[in-house]
Image (cartoon, rainbow, N blue to C red):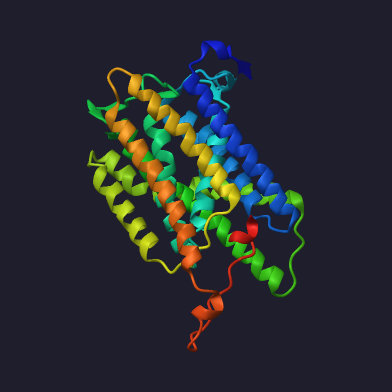
Length: 349
Protein backbone atom coordinates (compact mmCIF):
# COMPACT_ATOMS: atom_id res chain seq x y z
CA UNK A 1 0.00 0.00 0.00
CA UNK A 2 1.24 3.48 -0.81
CA UNK A 3 -0.04 6.97 -0.11
CA UNK A 4 -0.17 10.10 -2.22
CA UNK A 5 -0.21 13.62 -0.84
CA UNK A 6 -3.94 14.47 -0.56
CA UNK A 7 -3.14 18.15 -1.20
CA UNK A 8 -1.77 17.26 -4.62
CA UNK A 9 -4.87 15.32 -5.67
CA UNK A 10 -7.98 16.87 -7.18
CA UNK A 11 -10.90 17.29 -4.79
CA UNK A 12 -13.10 15.25 -7.14
CA UNK A 13 -11.10 12.15 -6.21
CA UNK A 14 -11.59 12.88 -2.51
CA UNK A 15 -15.36 13.14 -3.05
CA UNK A 16 -15.47 9.63 -4.48
CA UNK A 17 -13.34 8.27 -1.62
CA UNK A 18 -15.61 9.89 0.98
CA UNK A 19 -18.84 8.73 -0.69
CA UNK A 20 -17.69 5.12 -1.02
CA UNK A 21 -16.13 4.92 2.44
CA UNK A 22 -19.15 6.48 4.17
CA UNK A 23 -21.68 4.26 2.42
CA UNK A 24 -19.68 1.14 3.26
CA UNK A 25 -19.13 2.04 6.92
CA UNK A 26 -22.84 2.73 7.40
CA UNK A 27 -23.81 -0.40 5.46
CA UNK A 28 -21.52 -2.64 7.54
CA UNK A 29 -22.74 -1.15 10.83
CA UNK A 30 -26.33 -1.64 9.69
CA UNK A 31 -25.65 -5.19 8.49
CA UNK A 32 -23.97 -6.17 11.77
CA UNK A 33 -26.88 -4.81 13.78
CA UNK A 34 -29.31 -6.85 11.69
CA UNK A 35 -27.09 -9.92 12.01
CA UNK A 36 -27.20 -9.65 15.79
CA UNK A 37 -30.99 -9.47 15.58
CA UNK A 38 -31.04 -12.75 13.70
CA UNK A 39 -31.24 -11.31 10.17
CA UNK A 40 -27.93 -12.08 8.40
CA UNK A 41 -29.01 -11.30 4.82
CA UNK A 42 -27.49 -7.82 4.70
CA UNK A 43 -24.14 -9.01 6.01
CA UNK A 44 -24.12 -11.84 3.48
CA UNK A 45 -25.01 -9.30 0.78
CA UNK A 46 -22.19 -6.92 1.72
CA UNK A 47 -19.58 -9.67 2.04
CA UNK A 48 -20.73 -11.32 -1.21
CA UNK A 49 -20.48 -8.00 -3.05
CA UNK A 50 -17.00 -7.47 -1.65
CA UNK A 51 -15.89 -10.97 -2.69
CA UNK A 52 -17.46 -10.53 -6.12
CA UNK A 53 -15.61 -7.25 -6.66
CA UNK A 54 -12.25 -8.54 -5.47
CA UNK A 55 -12.46 -11.64 -7.67
CA UNK A 56 -13.60 -9.61 -10.68
CA UNK A 57 -10.96 -6.90 -10.37
CA UNK A 58 -8.08 -9.31 -9.81
CA UNK A 59 -9.08 -11.48 -12.77
CA UNK A 60 -11.11 -9.93 -15.59
CA UNK A 61 -10.68 -6.31 -14.52
CA UNK A 62 -6.93 -5.90 -14.12
CA UNK A 63 -5.41 -9.13 -15.39
CA UNK A 64 -7.38 -10.05 -18.51
CA UNK A 65 -9.21 -7.09 -20.02
CA UNK A 66 -7.11 -4.13 -18.80
CA UNK A 67 -9.64 -1.79 -20.38
CA UNK A 68 -8.81 1.19 -18.16
CA UNK A 69 -6.06 2.87 -16.14
CA UNK A 70 -6.99 4.10 -12.68
CA UNK A 71 -6.22 7.61 -11.45
CA UNK A 72 -3.91 8.41 -8.56
CA UNK A 73 -5.96 8.51 -5.35
CA UNK A 74 -4.74 9.15 -1.81
CA UNK A 75 -4.50 5.46 -0.89
CA UNK A 76 -3.34 3.00 -3.52
CA UNK A 77 -2.85 -0.76 -3.37
CA UNK A 78 0.47 -1.67 -4.98
CA UNK A 79 -0.99 -4.24 -7.34
CA UNK A 80 1.39 -3.11 -10.06
CA UNK A 81 4.19 -4.95 -8.26
CA UNK A 82 2.33 -8.27 -8.58
CA UNK A 83 3.43 -10.35 -11.60
CA UNK A 84 0.90 -9.98 -14.41
CA UNK A 85 -0.54 -6.69 -13.18
CA UNK A 86 0.43 -3.39 -14.77
CA UNK A 87 -1.10 -0.69 -12.54
CA UNK A 88 -1.87 0.06 -8.90
CA UNK A 89 -5.45 -0.03 -7.63
CA UNK A 90 -7.18 2.72 -5.63
CA UNK A 91 -8.65 1.40 -2.39
CA UNK A 92 -12.07 2.79 -3.30
CA UNK A 93 -12.39 0.08 -5.99
CA UNK A 94 -12.81 -2.55 -3.27
CA UNK A 95 -15.63 -0.46 -1.78
CA UNK A 96 -17.39 0.31 -5.06
CA UNK A 97 -19.07 -3.07 -5.49
CA UNK A 98 -20.56 -3.30 -1.98
CA UNK A 99 -21.75 0.32 -2.22
CA UNK A 100 -23.61 -0.13 -5.52
CA UNK A 101 -25.08 -3.52 -4.62
CA UNK A 102 -26.09 -2.63 -1.07
CA UNK A 103 -27.84 0.56 -2.17
CA UNK A 104 -29.45 -1.23 -5.10
CA UNK A 105 -30.60 -4.09 -2.87
CA UNK A 106 -32.27 -1.68 -0.44
CA UNK A 107 -34.03 0.19 -3.24
CA UNK A 108 -35.38 -2.97 -4.85
CA UNK A 109 -36.42 -4.28 -1.46
CA UNK A 110 -38.60 -1.20 -0.97
CA UNK A 111 -40.94 -2.31 -3.75
CA UNK A 112 -41.82 -5.63 -2.12
CA UNK A 113 -41.62 -7.63 -5.35
CA UNK A 114 -42.81 -11.13 -4.50
CA UNK A 115 -41.02 -13.25 -7.11
CA UNK A 116 -37.29 -13.63 -6.51
CA UNK A 117 -36.62 -13.77 -10.25
CA UNK A 118 -38.66 -10.62 -10.91
CA UNK A 119 -36.97 -8.94 -7.96
CA UNK A 120 -33.52 -9.75 -9.33
CA UNK A 121 -34.41 -8.61 -12.85
CA UNK A 122 -35.81 -5.38 -11.44
CA UNK A 123 -32.51 -4.89 -9.66
CA UNK A 124 -30.90 -4.50 -13.07
CA UNK A 125 -32.93 -1.33 -13.62
CA UNK A 126 -31.81 0.08 -10.28
CA UNK A 127 -28.12 -0.84 -10.51
CA UNK A 128 -27.69 0.63 -13.99
CA UNK A 129 -29.20 3.89 -12.70
CA UNK A 130 -26.79 3.82 -9.75
CA UNK A 131 -23.80 3.07 -11.96
CA UNK A 132 -24.59 5.66 -14.66
CA UNK A 133 -23.34 8.72 -12.71
CA UNK A 134 -20.15 6.87 -11.82
CA UNK A 135 -19.61 5.62 -15.37
CA UNK A 136 -20.00 8.97 -17.12
CA UNK A 137 -18.34 11.15 -14.44
CA UNK A 138 -15.17 9.11 -13.91
CA UNK A 139 -13.37 9.69 -17.23
CA UNK A 140 -14.21 13.41 -17.53
CA UNK A 141 -11.05 15.52 -18.01
CA UNK A 142 -11.82 17.59 -14.90
CA UNK A 143 -12.38 14.44 -12.78
CA UNK A 144 -10.04 11.68 -14.02
CA UNK A 145 -10.97 8.85 -11.70
CA UNK A 146 -9.73 6.68 -14.55
CA UNK A 147 -9.25 6.74 -18.31
CA UNK A 148 -10.45 4.14 -20.76
CA UNK A 149 -8.04 2.28 -23.00
CA UNK A 150 -9.55 2.44 -26.48
CA UNK A 151 -8.91 -1.07 -27.74
CA UNK A 152 -8.83 -1.64 -31.49
CA UNK A 153 -8.64 -4.88 -33.46
CA UNK A 154 -7.88 -4.70 -37.15
CA UNK A 155 -8.47 -0.96 -37.10
CA UNK A 156 -11.94 -1.16 -35.54
CA UNK A 157 -12.90 -0.05 -32.05
CA UNK A 158 -13.98 -2.83 -29.70
CA UNK A 159 -16.25 -0.73 -27.48
CA UNK A 160 -19.07 1.70 -28.14
CA UNK A 161 -19.59 4.62 -25.77
CA UNK A 162 -22.53 6.75 -24.71
CA UNK A 163 -21.18 10.03 -23.33
CA UNK A 164 -17.99 8.23 -22.33
CA UNK A 165 -19.88 5.30 -20.76
CA UNK A 166 -19.20 1.95 -22.48
CA UNK A 167 -22.37 0.16 -23.53
CA UNK A 168 -20.75 -3.06 -22.33
CA UNK A 169 -20.55 -1.63 -18.80
CA UNK A 170 -24.26 -0.81 -18.85
CA UNK A 171 -25.01 -4.39 -19.93
CA UNK A 172 -22.73 -5.67 -17.18
CA UNK A 173 -24.59 -3.65 -14.53
CA UNK A 174 -27.92 -4.95 -15.83
CA UNK A 175 -26.84 -8.59 -15.54
CA UNK A 176 -24.08 -9.30 -12.99
CA UNK A 177 -25.47 -7.45 -9.91
CA UNK A 178 -28.95 -8.95 -10.49
CA UNK A 179 -27.34 -12.40 -10.52
CA UNK A 180 -25.61 -11.62 -7.22
CA UNK A 181 -28.84 -10.44 -5.61
CA UNK A 182 -30.73 -13.45 -6.98
CA UNK A 183 -28.21 -15.74 -5.30
CA UNK A 184 -28.47 -13.82 -2.02
CA UNK A 185 -32.28 -13.98 -2.10
CA UNK A 186 -32.16 -17.69 -2.92
CA UNK A 187 -29.88 -18.23 0.07
CA UNK A 188 -32.26 -16.15 2.19
CA UNK A 189 -35.25 -18.21 1.02
CA UNK A 190 -33.52 -21.50 1.81
CA UNK A 191 -32.50 -20.19 5.23
CA UNK A 192 -36.06 -19.05 5.98
CA UNK A 193 -37.41 -22.44 4.93
CA UNK A 194 -35.14 -24.26 7.39
CA UNK A 195 -35.62 -21.78 10.21
CA UNK A 196 -39.41 -21.83 10.00
CA UNK A 197 -39.70 -25.42 8.81
CA UNK A 198 -38.06 -28.53 10.09
CA UNK A 199 -34.59 -28.72 11.62
CA UNK A 200 -32.26 -25.87 10.75
CA UNK A 201 -28.65 -26.78 9.98
CA UNK A 202 -25.89 -25.49 12.20
CA UNK A 203 -24.71 -22.13 10.84
CA UNK A 204 -21.45 -20.78 12.16
CA UNK A 205 -20.49 -17.11 11.73
CA UNK A 206 -17.53 -18.23 9.62
CA UNK A 207 -19.80 -20.05 7.20
CA UNK A 208 -22.31 -17.19 7.01
CA UNK A 209 -19.87 -14.31 6.68
CA UNK A 210 -17.02 -15.98 4.77
CA UNK A 211 -17.91 -19.27 3.06
CA UNK A 212 -21.32 -18.31 1.66
CA UNK A 213 -20.18 -14.88 0.35
CA UNK A 214 -17.07 -16.39 -1.22
CA UNK A 215 -19.18 -19.02 -2.97
CA UNK A 216 -21.63 -16.38 -4.20
CA UNK A 217 -18.76 -14.20 -5.42
CA UNK A 218 -17.32 -17.10 -7.41
CA UNK A 219 -20.72 -18.02 -8.85
CA UNK A 220 -21.36 -14.45 -10.00
CA UNK A 221 -17.98 -14.27 -11.74
CA UNK A 222 -18.61 -17.54 -13.57
CA UNK A 223 -22.33 -17.17 -14.26
CA UNK A 224 -21.83 -13.56 -15.26
CA UNK A 225 -19.63 -14.65 -18.15
CA UNK A 226 -22.56 -16.63 -19.55
CA UNK A 227 -24.86 -13.62 -19.19
CA UNK A 228 -22.29 -11.53 -21.05
CA UNK A 229 -22.13 -13.95 -23.97
CA UNK A 230 -24.53 -12.01 -26.26
CA UNK A 231 -22.64 -8.72 -25.91
CA UNK A 232 -19.38 -10.65 -26.34
CA UNK A 233 -20.70 -11.92 -29.67
CA UNK A 234 -21.49 -8.34 -30.66
CA UNK A 235 -17.93 -7.32 -29.86
CA UNK A 236 -16.42 -10.30 -31.65
CA UNK A 237 -18.48 -9.92 -34.83
CA UNK A 238 -18.38 -6.10 -34.87
CA UNK A 239 -22.14 -5.77 -34.36
CA UNK A 240 -23.78 -2.66 -32.86
CA UNK A 241 -23.94 -2.84 -29.06
CA UNK A 242 -27.00 -0.62 -28.63
CA UNK A 243 -29.63 -3.20 -29.69
CA UNK A 244 -28.41 -5.67 -27.08
CA UNK A 245 -28.39 -3.06 -24.32
CA UNK A 246 -31.80 -1.66 -25.26
CA UNK A 247 -33.36 -5.14 -25.50
CA UNK A 248 -32.09 -6.09 -22.04
CA UNK A 249 -33.16 -2.75 -20.58
CA UNK A 250 -36.64 -3.03 -22.09
CA UNK A 251 -37.11 -6.54 -20.69
CA UNK A 252 -35.99 -5.50 -17.20
CA UNK A 253 -38.17 -2.39 -17.18
CA UNK A 254 -41.25 -4.40 -18.22
CA UNK A 255 -40.63 -6.92 -15.44
CA UNK A 256 -40.06 -4.11 -12.93
CA UNK A 257 -43.27 -2.31 -13.87
CA UNK A 258 -45.62 -5.27 -14.13
CA UNK A 259 -44.32 -7.73 -11.52
CA UNK A 260 -46.54 -8.60 -8.57
CA UNK A 261 -45.46 -6.33 -5.75
CA UNK A 262 -46.50 -4.93 -2.41
CA UNK A 263 -44.34 -1.84 -1.71
CA UNK A 264 -43.04 -1.38 1.83
CA UNK A 265 -41.01 1.79 1.28
CA UNK A 266 -37.42 2.46 2.29
CA UNK A 267 -36.20 2.47 5.87
CA UNK A 268 -34.13 5.26 7.37
CA UNK A 269 -30.76 3.74 6.52
CA UNK A 270 -31.70 3.30 2.86
CA UNK A 271 -32.62 6.99 2.66
CA UNK A 272 -29.31 7.98 4.27
CA UNK A 273 -27.30 5.88 1.81
CA UNK A 274 -29.25 7.22 -1.15
CA UNK A 275 -28.84 10.78 0.11
CA UNK A 276 -25.06 10.42 0.37
CA UNK A 277 -24.84 8.96 -3.11
CA UNK A 278 -27.06 11.59 -4.72
CA UNK A 279 -25.38 14.49 -2.91
CA UNK A 280 -21.88 13.38 -3.90
CA UNK A 281 -22.66 13.11 -7.60
CA UNK A 282 -24.82 16.23 -7.61
CA UNK A 283 -21.84 18.24 -6.32
CA UNK A 284 -19.60 16.77 -9.01
CA UNK A 285 -22.18 17.43 -11.74
CA UNK A 286 -22.60 21.04 -10.61
CA UNK A 287 -18.83 21.56 -10.60
CA UNK A 288 -18.62 20.21 -14.15
CA UNK A 289 -20.36 23.35 -15.41
CA UNK A 290 -17.02 25.11 -14.85
CA UNK A 291 -15.20 22.72 -17.19
CA UNK A 292 -14.33 23.73 -20.75
CA UNK A 293 -16.04 22.50 -22.78
CA UNK A 294 -19.03 21.90 -20.53
CA UNK A 295 -19.91 18.16 -20.64
CA UNK A 296 -23.60 18.84 -21.16
CA UNK A 297 -24.53 15.29 -22.13
CA UNK A 298 -22.83 13.76 -19.11
CA UNK A 299 -24.37 16.30 -16.73
CA UNK A 300 -27.82 15.60 -18.17
CA UNK A 301 -27.37 11.84 -17.87
CA UNK A 302 -26.26 12.16 -14.24
CA UNK A 303 -29.22 14.42 -13.44
CA UNK A 304 -31.71 12.04 -15.05
CA UNK A 305 -30.28 8.98 -13.27
CA UNK A 306 -30.19 10.63 -9.83
CA UNK A 307 -33.65 12.14 -10.23
CA UNK A 308 -35.09 8.79 -11.31
CA UNK A 309 -33.58 7.06 -8.28
CA UNK A 310 -35.06 9.64 -5.91
CA UNK A 311 -38.47 9.46 -7.60
CA UNK A 312 -38.50 5.66 -7.42
CA UNK A 313 -37.59 5.81 -3.73
CA UNK A 314 -40.34 8.35 -3.05
CA UNK A 315 -42.86 6.32 -5.02
CA UNK A 316 -42.15 3.16 -3.03
CA UNK A 317 -42.97 5.01 0.18
CA UNK A 318 -46.05 6.67 -1.32
CA UNK A 319 -47.34 3.34 -2.64
CA UNK A 320 -46.69 1.67 0.72
CA UNK A 321 -48.79 4.27 2.54
CA UNK A 322 -51.67 3.79 0.10
CA UNK A 323 -51.48 0.01 0.27
CA UNK A 324 -54.34 -1.60 2.24
CA UNK A 325 -53.41 -3.90 5.12
CA UNK A 326 -52.54 -7.45 4.08
CA UNK A 327 -55.70 -8.80 5.71
CA UNK A 328 -57.91 -6.44 3.69
CA UNK A 329 -56.22 -7.35 0.42
CA UNK A 330 -57.22 -10.99 1.03
CA UNK A 331 -60.88 -10.17 1.63
CA UNK A 332 -63.38 -11.94 -0.60
CA UNK A 333 -61.83 -15.37 -0.29
CA UNK A 334 -58.58 -14.82 -2.17
CA UNK A 335 -55.67 -16.86 -0.97
CA UNK A 336 -52.99 -15.07 1.03
CA UNK A 337 -49.59 -14.69 -0.55
CA UNK A 338 -46.43 -16.21 0.79
CA UNK A 339 -45.28 -14.12 3.76
CA UNK A 340 -42.25 -11.93 3.25
CA UNK A 341 -38.90 -13.02 4.55
CA UNK A 342 -37.95 -11.62 7.97
CA UNK A 343 -34.96 -9.91 6.33
CA UNK A 344 -37.06 -7.55 4.21
CA UNK A 345 -39.43 -4.69 4.73
CA UNK A 346 -39.73 -1.92 7.28
CA UNK A 347 -38.99 -4.26 10.14
CA UNK A 348 -35.37 -3.63 9.28
CA UNK A 349 -35.43 0.06 10.14
